[in-house]
Image 1 (cartoon, helix red, strand yellow):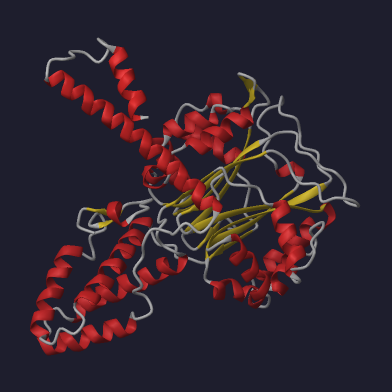
Image 2 (tube, chains in turn brown, orange; image 1 turned 120 degrees about the vertical axis):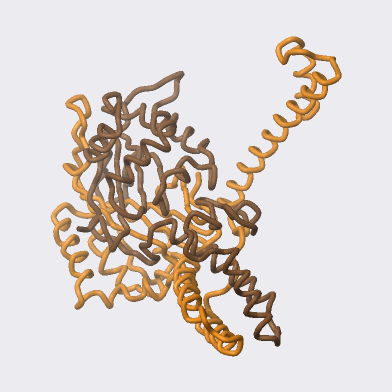
Length: 213
Length: 254
C-alpha cells in the first residue's frame, strides 16, 4: 500500500475550501492566518495527538504556470492541505486527533466544504477519507517505531551521552558500576511513560517529562 | 510562513506533467520500489538528512469533490506533489539532491513540464523555488533531533537495554569490559542534542513569533501580579472594579 512504509503512514489530505468571505477576507486568507496563529512545538495541538511524527498544513491557492510554451492551468477551488507522518493506522490517528485537537479542527475546517456535517469521530474519519489522496511513493529515512519509543530513545541517548562524559576516566570498576545502576534507576530504559522527552519539546529546559534534564 | 520546525524543514513542490505521461510516471515510481531500479535512489539513504518524503501524482479527477456545488477541476496537466521533511537549510538540501542523485531526480521529474535536469544547479534551484508552496503550519514531535539522531537513538536504546541484561549479575570487572564495549559500539551515536540554532530567515521568523508570545505572556503575568498585590493591600477588590488602573498598568508594561 503506497500510503504506508513499514509502520509509518503518510496521510495526504486536500480539503476544498468554501468559495466565500468574511469581513472582506476570503476563507482561504482566514484559514492561512489561523494556521499561522496556531501554537508551536510542545504547545501545538498536534503535540497532544499520539503517534504524530510530523504534520504540516497549508493553503493551496492554485497550481503554477511554467511559462511559454506550457499551457495555463488553474484550480477551481482552493484547498486546505494536511500532510501527516504518523505511526500506525490512519483511522486510529484521526480518532485521536478528533479527541485531542478538536478545537483546532473546528477552528480550521469550518471553512471547508461539507465539514458542517461532521459531528463525531466517525464523521471526521469518513470526511477525511473523502478528502484523502493516495501516495504514489513513500520514502522513509527515519524509523517507524511508535512515537513513545522514539521519544524515550532520544531521552536515553541524551542522558547516556552525559553519563559517559561525566564518568570519563573513572578508574574504579565497582564505583562506575554503582553509578551506572543509579543511572539506570533514574532513566528507567523500559518505562515509556517517563522519564522521557515531551512530544514537540523545543528546548532542553522543558524537554523531560518525569525526571531531570 | 512556517517551513521550519526545529531542525526539520517542510518542502512542498507542485509541478505539472503532461496528462498522457501520468501513468508512465506512476510506473517509474513503481519501478523504483523494485530491486532493479532501487539503486537509483540509494543516494536518498546516503544523504540521511530526510525524515520522510513522499510523491503524490494527481489528475484533475483525483482532486476531492465533496458537493455538487463545488466546481469540478478541469486541468490540462496532471500534477506531481512532492512533500519532504529534511534537516538543514533549503540550499543544503537542494544541492545535496542535485549532487547525490541527479540521475534519480531526472528519472522522477523528467516528464514534468519545465524540468531543467538536476545538473547544473542554478536552473534546478530556480525550478524548485518557482514551484514551491510555502507551509503555513509545521509541527515536529522532536524539534531538537535530526533524522540521524532519531536513528542513532534507536541504536542507543537497544544497546542500552542489551547492556542491562548482559550485566545483571556481572562482577565490577566484567561490567567495566561490557561498559567499554557498549561505548565503542555507540561512539558515533552519542552526540548530544540541543535546540536548533537560528540559521535562516524562516527560523528567525519563528523565533520572533515565540518572542511576541513570551512578551504577551509576561504582560499578562505582570497584570495578574499587580492586581493580586492590590487586592491583598485592599486597593482593589474586583478586577472589573477599577478598569482604568488595570489599563494604565498594561500600557506601562507594554
